[in-house]
Length: 384
Image (cartoon, rainbow, N blue to C red):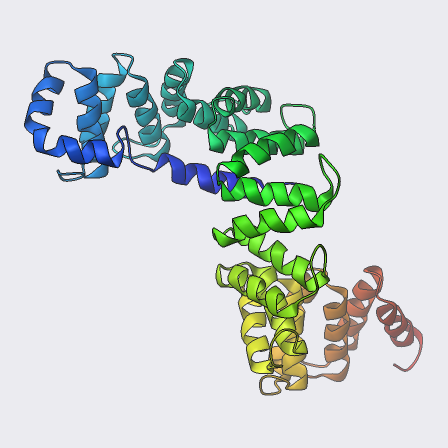
């Protein structure tokens, strides 16, 4: 199982959108002195230029104006102010106040990174990882992540752990991955906590330990990490590292489902249909199947087809059943292919067509469904 790169990316983009240049308290203190600071900035003081740029970027005490923020960051950055160079990289990366330009972003991040700015080091690593503004180079990404991670930059610790876990730019080394995930996790980083839990659950980098996995999943889940919520639900559903508890399982699946995780939505639907952890409720099951099905989950599409074919949870509607079976069948789900074959054979909700029935039975057979093979043989040579 690959460690989730997407969690890292989302976090970094949020990070670079945070307050520019100065902390909130410093900005608040500087607002009354804006005129004096502006005078100093116009006289070439790089710290004042940085502060003015940050105030324009964040709209603190003055109207937000990204174009003016860029101008002031530029003035300070050209005087080798590392924070201004970092901020300028952010503006180019996000296209705020300037046209989006990853080449310029990389250039300014590099200047700040070479002065030891950990945010710039991490973001430059991200550009190398994604091939944005520079040629994709995981080794360079690892180099810059390491520089920032070693200075306790939490995002870089997570990113470096991911590179070690996936063997990108460095030799795959789960022990190193575990080390960096732990450092990020101990700083309270939800993605680091999730990945540390995943490492324990899979026994990567150390012995498999479901109790530790649950502990770290829970820390991340309580911060709203959707993957951790889903996995924690799975631990309770399967009874791994904890007493099996369907009430807890559906609670955590629901939290992930409400954030749009389609597999969690499917699982919530299944638990309602089976009365696991909740009172059996086919209407609720259909609600959650539909959410997952509309996101393209094949199993949910199949389950929705069954609902319409049987009328359990909604009115019986063979047309709808055939449509949902078709969506799942096109994704290669053997059960859906078989059921769609039956719909074609009997002409339920769809025009009767034995040729198409045979084709879908064959596909189900090719995907390992014994029923599909039997139906295909019967239809091929004898009465079905």
